[in-house]
Length: 82
Ligand code: FES
Image (cartoon, rainbow, N blue to C red; front, top):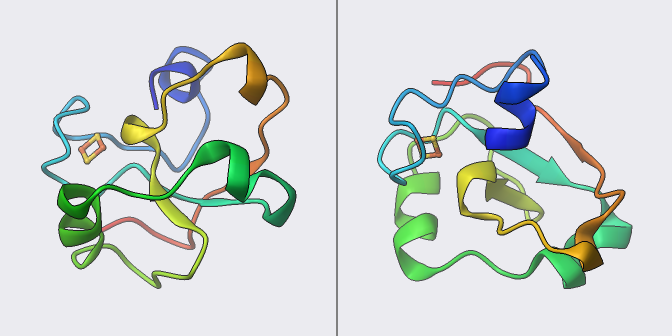
């Protein structure tokens, strides 16, 4: 989420600033990256209930910890954020 905001990526609102409390940083992780990006925590899954058009690859981008292993990570944003 922070990388997206710093690079002015459209579609990431992040209203709570990364506190896992708004679901406006919802993204879809590309299939090739789902293992490396990991699964959402229980708290993240609860917050995803408030996101638009949640899919199996949905994550809240503020909860994805960027590491060298995620260099090149591909995500897309939903049609809209709630
Ligand atoms: S920025 Fe609010 S849940 Fe991610």
